[in-house]
Length: 130
Image 1 (cartoon, rainbow, N blue to C red):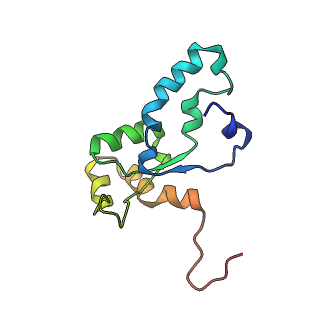
Image 2: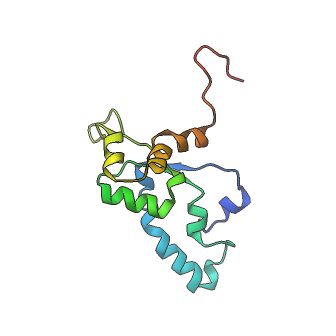
C-alpha cells in the first residue's frame, strides 16, 4: 500500500486469495501509521482506502471472519472462494456465504457479481478470444 503502486496505476486490479490473508486485519495498523508518522505519507489516501480498491476471495472459515472481511474490504470487493479441490477447501462456499447473514444484494455480489466486474465478460463457449 505504501509504495504508491495503486495510486500510480488506478486501473490495476489486484485479487488476493484466502480472504486476502492478513490484509483486512492490517488496515487499522496501516491507517494508524499513515496518520501518526510523516514518513508513512508516501500515498495521498489512507491505506485502507487503497486496499478497498483491491479484491479478495471469501475463503475464510467462519461467518464472523467473513463479516469482518466484508466490513473491512467492502461488499463490492469480495468474490466467492472455495480452495477446491484441495483438502482444506470449503465443500459448499455458497452455504458458508449464506450463513454469514448478509442482505441479498451483498450475497449476490459476492456470489458472482463482483467476480464478473473484476474479470469482465466471459466469452460464450465456442467463441474466439480477441
